[in-house]
Length: 237
Image (cartoon, rainbow, N blue to C red; front, side):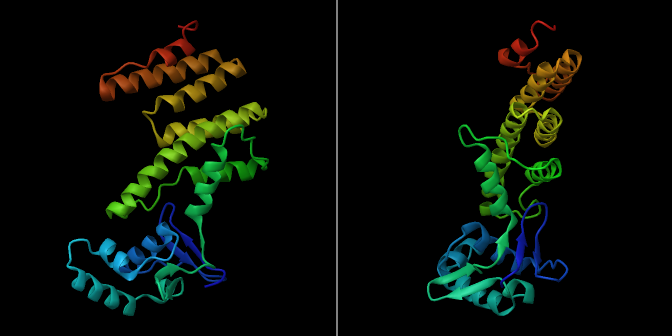
């Protein structure tokens, strides 16, 4: 449906033009999510096998026919039937695809800082903080969600470095702090924030970030920060 948007980050919603968000039934959601993540025409047999992996081929095909007949109106509006199978309507925007494209762009070698306003940059950081379909537990969703978790963690750290190089320290620190909130035990996220404080001359803040992380790491895993991280604050200690 032209003008429709599918939201997969944070929660599942279908948004049609000039209409409030709609949350289809669980069965409809699973079908729409599968097509959105595949991002291509998927054969009916492949769809049925993914949605009902424990059923026989015939039973899975029967369940798919029943699911298509029972699709909620919102889900039906974004599912397209083709001679080759099923796909998400080409006119339907997907927030996850846009977020992935942004994150992958930030990680490109020599990628410059995004020339966005402060408000736009904060909005981009907020998007990178959102989980993919946190209430969905199919294996194919969990695999994609884990890939997104790692991608957005790396993208937030890279964005912090790019914003710092562009002399936008407050936004850079916002990206680094977001990376830490998302992954509290990720050492490279803490290293990014420590570097930003050192560049700004905030040595006390840099040491505070290090000590807080060292304490949390020891309490959770009985581990110490790596030599790389200790070297960052070596002179301060």
